[in-house]
Image (tube, rainbow, N blue to C red; front, side):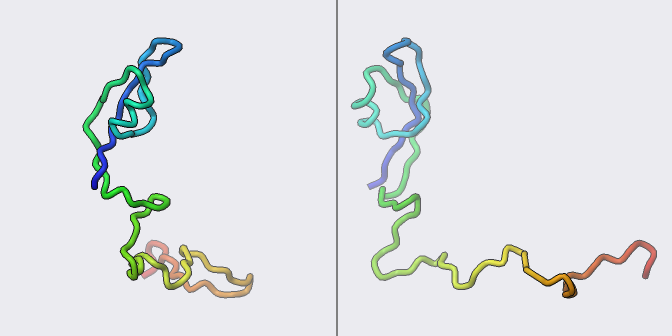
Length: 96
């Protein structure tokens, strides 16, 4: 079942000032925690609520399609001081 998470503000019990919450919460969670509060934006609807470390869970038996099969090189390589670079150098202007 999708969750509706709301941006809200609440009244601080010590200062009496309205503070904007730094997180989203479901309506019933806000009501349980704060005496005075109000919703300040439309709800953010999130999937079925089955998450692990921010990554949606995959069905049993399926592998994630984002699995990496090779190690990334990130465009870097380790070469000795005497090795030649394979990168093509741009031609200086007028040298055709």
